[in-house]
Amino acid sequence: MNIVLFGPPGSGKGTQAIKLAEKYEIPHVSTGDILRENLKRQTALGLEAKKYMDRGELVPDGVLIGIIKDRLAQPDCDSGCIFDGYPRTIPQAEVLETILNELGKTLDVVVNIEVPDVEVLKRISGRRMCACGASYHILFNRPEQEGICDLCGCKLYQREDDKETAVLNRLAVYKKQSQPLIEYYRQKGVLVTVDGTAEIQAVFDEISAALDTVPAT
Ligand code: ADP
Ligand code: ADP
Ligand code: ZN
Image 1: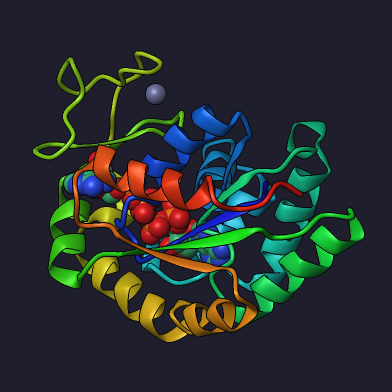
Image 2 (image 1 turned 45 degrees about the horizontal axis):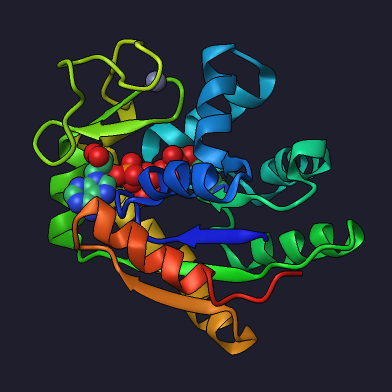
């Protein structure tokens, strides 16, 4: 099953993707995590992406194509995967469809996680990340031990782009460049919308219930 988790920055895509990956035993593919990992290793890709990420802008579509192609070609994606943060533009959605088709796969469902701006701002300002991709919140989703990841024991940090200025830009970019995908996928008949304001477990249950009705491919 190939699933896209879609929603504004801070809507809970990463949080849900980790839980869904465990339940459905398919990999979590986060373009944000892949870009941040490249940044950390100072690869050419990471350094190119940094210019855009720091400003809260989208990395150009062309840069993402190679990332997605390489990732989908890996054998652990054979029985599907959970995309988190991709696609974010209509051209990216078209590329994804082409790549999946070439591999004889289909996109089964796009989960649109709805969260209003005020809530998104509260979530992003309190978000603390781990390099493993896990995210926590200083009030809403605290790790067992303050500042330490429950999953891998690493030290948590605040993302550069989660600090004030980039956040408002990321929301504006989402509305302008990403939101049109909702209509795009609705017309394709694969869109499921969930209320992302509920508690983490309740959102997970709602997404799971929706996914359990998707016919196996
Ligand atoms: P995204 O990947 O969509 O940017 P995250 O999964 O990183 O979002 O979640 C953003 C922040 O909100 C994190 O600090 C996370 O712990 C917190 N969070 C996620 N889901 C919920 C929820 N349902 N209720 C409250 N806080 C949440
Ligand atoms: P968010 O919490 O905002 O959903 P992500 O971790 O998914 O954040 O992405 C962080 C940044 O990485 C984005 O603001 C953007 O600069 C870049 N990025 C991630 N995925 C994409 C994508 N599919 N297309 C373009 N840029 C991306
Ligand atoms: Zn971790």
